[in-house]
Image (cartoon, rainbow, N blue to C red; front, side, top):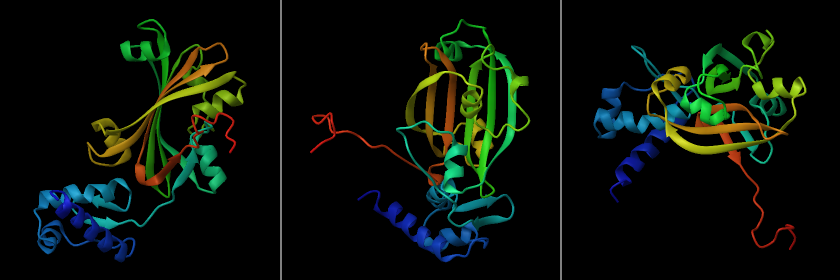
Length: 243
């Protein structure tokens, strides 16, 4: 019962946002808090869910505006595909922004993730993926420099390291991903234009070659409202999937 008032606040805000035309400004925080009978702090906390989903956008000094429901990328997790491939199949326009390709030396985390010695030379590719003029994902790939040098990425690079490696014929076999929900760090929040601590769906993945070598250690941060991921699972005592 303790959470009921907050859930009711979110439900009332959901109705208000749904009834407000896209592009229109919501009442100011003081007015809206007074209308809902809550403190401004409670109101801001409730509004964060809608901001993360991309339904509203706060503009410093201008107010909070309704954005409308954006496109959703829906995908199963049984097959590894790039965001570009998924978007293209769904007829969505996806663009890469804030692309940074840089050299660095492996710290302990990157060395462990890639199975390379400390201080090995690496290439890191960071970028923001946008659709419908909104940032929806922040992607970071880290690769040994002997797999990818910064100058090897073509000017036509559209954001997918996976597609680049496949396109040049690398013998890739499997990817293992740890999936979790985390609060956005300052760096990721800035890139995605959200608030620090907002919840993101996160994949930390390792991409393997046919010789079981890790060639890409990646971090993918997704704004939940724009992605629906699902998986088809086989029943444990029915290995053939038959009835």
